[in-house]
Length: 86
Image 1 (cartoon, rainbow, N blue to C red):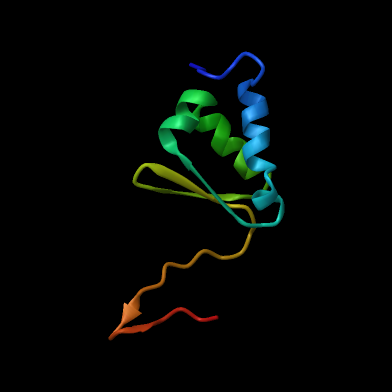
Image 2 (image 1 turned 90 degrees about the vertical axis):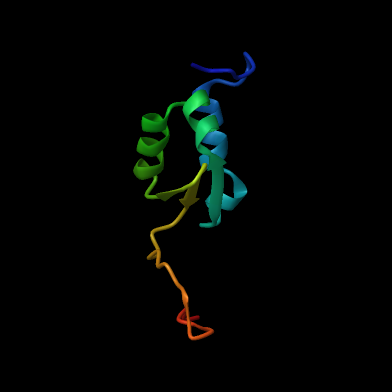
């Protein structure tokens, strides 16, 4: 399944993605689904994200990982005004 260089195992790749500076600061990380599936597998990726308390959403070709437990809301403009609150 893996197409990683010999020195980079699926476990190391997963650790690097989910322990990046952005992830450690509670930010957002995005990865292509095909890369996740090819390099570590969907189930292993999602299980590790959940174990860390991260939230993952899928959109088109990407997993978007919210590296925090804050609520996720979909916001839309209504009559040209956003319903997003600061």
